[in-house]
Length: 216
Figure 1 (cartoon, one colour):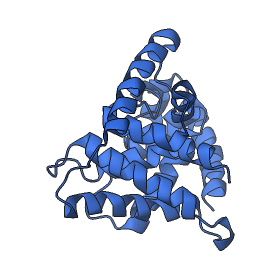
Figure 2: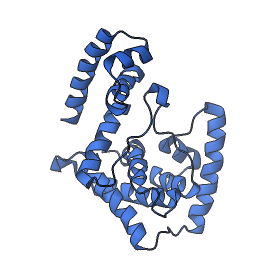
Figure 3: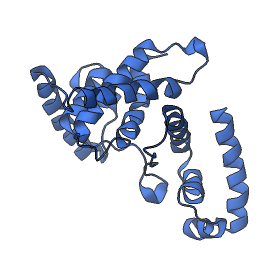
Figure 4: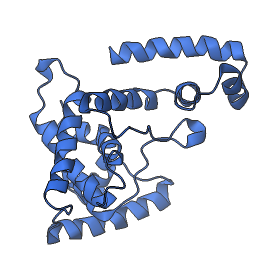
């Protein structure tokens, strides 16, 4: 498993876990930085031979680091070097956004900063950078709300579903979002996407089979 690529590919897990703790008195950037530390630990300690999906293993580790933050008083100590890196990250991210019309991925930002992706991920948390994880709502983007009563296993299942949905082509992703995250009927989905109800029905069956295969 490529360490840097795995960190880059799974940074969305941190954001999704952090949303589980919003509104509990700790700033988002502190929660995110703690989650990034958890992600790096999960990547470094994950054993693929155990037959467990990475997201299933990583979520409890990420949540554990975030919960530790609350136990330690709700603040992450940011060293001078990380603060300086965070300022550089913010500047480079802004320049990249102006050039490319989007925020950089963790790997792209790491390359710009000449650091490892793990360091770039921590800098993101310290600099409060907005990171776009999905497409716009019109393209089926947005976040899945995770109930505060969910256990770690349930959260891992929901985040795994979120990941495979975001890997779908835009129109397929929109069908699933409308049908299962927004509770729209096939007719309403068809009207929103310029399709017929029959087309939505047929395509939905194909997509669901693909999702089941990826999650099995």
